Length: 245
Image (spheres, rainbow, N blue to C red):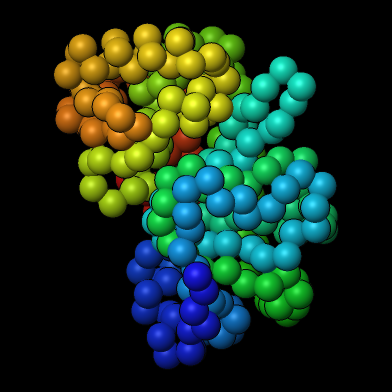
């Protein structure tokens, strides 16, 4: 469902809920928001497929979107975007498509803009373009950190890191998450997901039942996660100017 926002309606809502939009100057944001339309983001909704032309850029205000790479051996998440950023980064780098699928992993809402309007606006405003490029750098740094994390850290540490990142991007302490989705995010088979989540649940950090995660001890979960969580969080704060959590 989409709703076109008027210039007077869009700024107050988007600026308060999407950190990337909020970091723009008032003049740049006033120009950009005239092209925004409000959208609901539904679980399993595909925003674009690998190799397909990207028709919209998205600025989530809640929920979480995963960039997943589909390979012969399985599907793995390579990055995640929430209220701190945008979906459709290849357009910033003069691309028209991506090698990944953009998949809504946790429901929420946000704003979208047609590609033609987006390209026109960043061509007219160097300051907007620079802000968005800083987000692109933060995202690529996230991907690099995740690659190292997946190689060096235990499954339980990685699971805690991923749950914290998702918790930062949702409203409240509970969100829907199936074992299938969590296996995508961690790049492992479902039995391994069950074991990792079981360890965190036994420790009292989470409660996991019937496809729902409840964060019951945030501080404990942070202690169980590897240092990659804070490294990613702090890098976003440095480059975008606002802490993710």
